[in-house]
Image 1 (cartoon, rainbow, N blue to C red):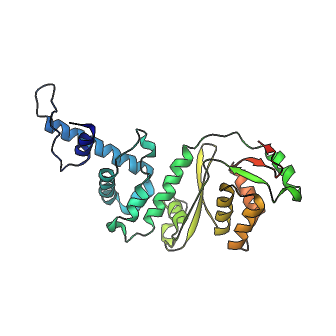
Image 2: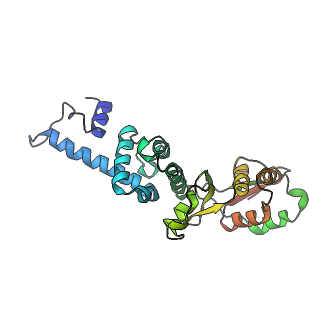
Image 3: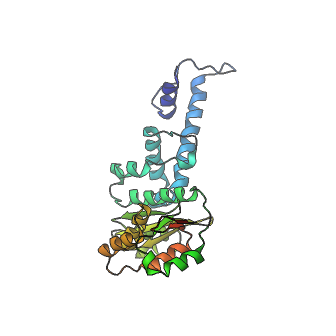
Length: 258
């Protein structure tokens, strides 16, 4: 018996008990292995339920548990850290035929996964906002300035109302008033110890994504304005600063300001 065959049998109830197993008291190892198998499957399903609570609420416990069980069997953990288990779950949902009637479900899962990543992102020292404000007051510095975003920052865009659906399941909106077919973008960031999720416009989303890709401020603003002529860089920067989303800036001369 090798580790691969044991793991395969552990996640597939149709597989027989691996040969070579012995119970210390002489009891039937198949019965003991079945109990172990059920415990492992249940723990992995519960791990997915902890990561994707809104997905679970949207489909109900029975549907979620059945879908999660199939995912567990198809994609076992690759790491002992179960907090990160579920990286492939959004893609699995998107390709899962019984979930095709809920086209927003996979993107809601992407949003929830981004929350988990934000919660576990590295800590960085707070930005000296007074020094940044002084630099921002000099128009000549702005176009070439690069802003480094906090590792927790993520933007999730969808053809569906993922931010509103998420908010409704936190009691922040009335679910009956949410139009799932409305395209939305969501900003995820960890502000202190709290992971925040907020709805943002397409211009703001493009701006943040451009900054995350290393584009200087002027280019990022241009990208945003090309998508949304009403984009306001001032209010967006203020929002990012208030949320602790900017950790460092670099001037065009190459000097870094922590």
